[in-house]
Image: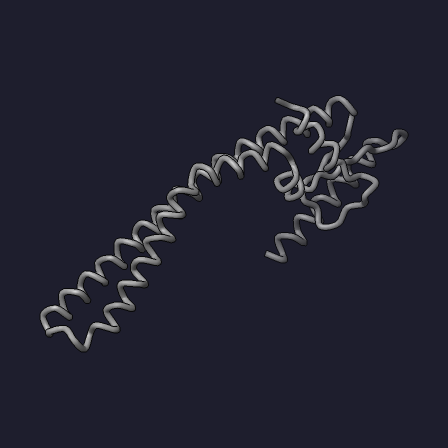
Length: 170
């Protein structure tokens, strides 16, 4: 992972050097966008997050309630266990195990569904952000716009401009 970052940095440096050689008499215009900040601060990303919370909030609450019920049933079993017959104890224990297995399956399905939807929503935000970045690139005649660089000067950071442009869209 670190080597990949180093090689990525070297490739970027080589690209910048090549661009600067080609642009000998003119100044190179470079921009930088912090994608994480765009995903955290743009209204579009916030709306996507709110949409996901609304969509999955009910299921999440049902899972929490089911977990509480299972925990209460397990505590009741522990308390009542010595008073039960062997058959009753085995039957209750099987019911608890089946309930826990069912709950784990529902949690896994919930997590998979939520992750798939999160990926869909984030992909839509990324696509819109990339279009905005491309518009800024074309309109302001940038030579290069980087995303997620290891280090970047505030002088070339256009993240706020991208967020503002995204927020201005309907």
